[in-house]
Image 1 (cartoon, one colour):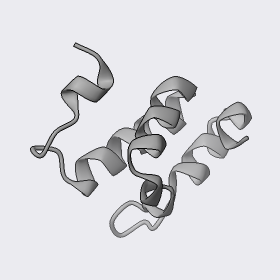
Image 2 (cartoon, rainbow, N blue to C red):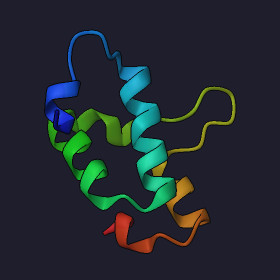
Image 3 (cartoon, rainbow, N blue to C red):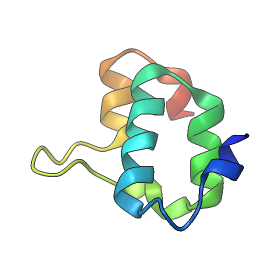
Image 4 (cartoon, rainbow, N blue to C red):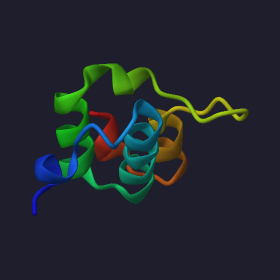
Length: 68
């Protein structure tokens, strides 16, 4: 089952936002792109409390290719 097949109504913005954070942190460009294509508003997602975006996590781990 592909990424889009797994995405459904059971995943809320928070769950997909956390998946984007994980993809950005791990340098998984393909998953990050797929998630953003599915929901471009995830680019504004930030973690609760800490207020870091996927961009912050990507840069902190040196995955600059995700930023482009």
